[in-house]
Length: 399
Image (cartoon, rainbow, N blue to C red):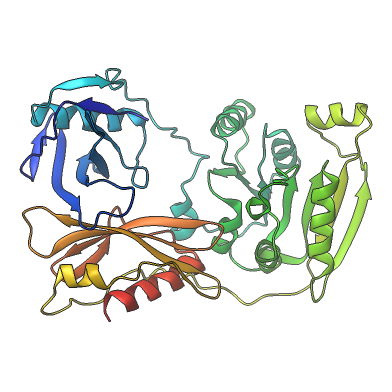
């Protein structure tokens, strides 16, 4: 993470600009919680990308670093923002790791799509097949070449795997694959009902010590059944007996279902790891769930607005009245973490809040401007848990 240590805490007047970087406002932590020091959030904008820089006292020095929640890419932009602030504030630098200002280009590729593409723009009349965690991409490429009339979607969070697959798609001239870097447990919400022929989940991380991070859950299975066509399949392949037993228990507790199980089934294509495991005598388990129901269409609720304006608004009163404990509801939660008052602006501030799904929460800042509210950096992804949590947040802010 890029950072700079300075000798003193030098604040600037905002809005200001330096070296192509805009500093929009500075907010100071309103309530100093136990084990936390005074912290400043510097709203920074560069190349039309907005993020916050944290500035805090570290005892013998002061630390400038990007805020984790709002961090953008590539990292060169973060370094540029930190250096610009040091220059405009005339701060004496003790140490830094921001001297390398090479700004690497983000991966730009016709096959690689942002999650917002699937939320707002993705449409196809073709059958869809999805692979969750495609690794080297060998199985996904094999299926795409074998089924040219099917639209494949590969979901992966490991950047080197994504880069390797994109390279191979170009080399082999494969055109029926889209790739997304996103949490597969949330992705299904943005696929239309009854449009998917197959969902492949091959060799997922078992997460024996952190079972809440597993792909398979009741929620994931239900979403899979919604998007699958009649006779569509959710196909698990794993070398972990514990994960196999866990998934079988979930699937056999469905109110209705059709599952099949195979051990050491040979596929047309396998990974080098699978070949190695078989040579070692390790069992490979396949569990296939078949869908036989047609589901109703799902409409995505994208409304994350904060209606209207609070008359006779008092920012400090709002901050003082916010709940301090996490509010756990049926299927979602809301937790107000911290509050910040914008310097030299009346009734303006930031509210740090974490909310949404228990296992896959989102953290955001709410920008408050004299009784009007909006999400800093834009709205959260419109998952169902995020949307219902937003309604609770709105209820609290306007009460």
